[in-house]
Amino acid sequence: QVQLVESGGGLVQAGGSLRLSCAASGSIFSINTMGWYRQAPGKQREWVAVITGGGSRDYADSVKGRFTISKDNAKNTVYLQMNSLKPEDTAVYYCYTRQYWGQGTQVTVSS
Image 1: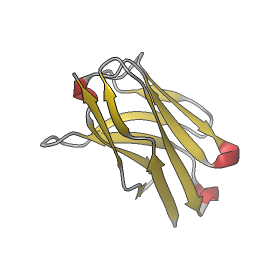
Image 2: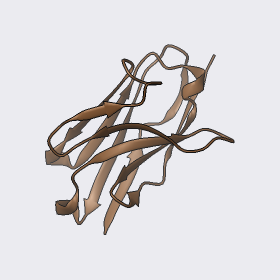
Image 3: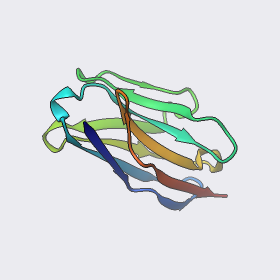
């Protein structure tokens, strides 16, 4: 079992920044690839970013150049630095690894 707890969401004006954190606990030896999804009201869940155990990263086109995913292995934590935020980035952001998901953290970007 792996537990994931997200934090760092909030309300920000367009053009602002937020950094999300996802702390992993439990059977962390099984954690390799971790990433983020988001779900806006009335929309399907959308993949945002991923980082592999080797440190390779990939991003959805909609966030490329604005978001950066990183991880701190010592803290078993993955981060999502979000810059130049847009109102369309408003969503609940979920951290995931394998079949495990966090509870989500709300990000609201006002215009």
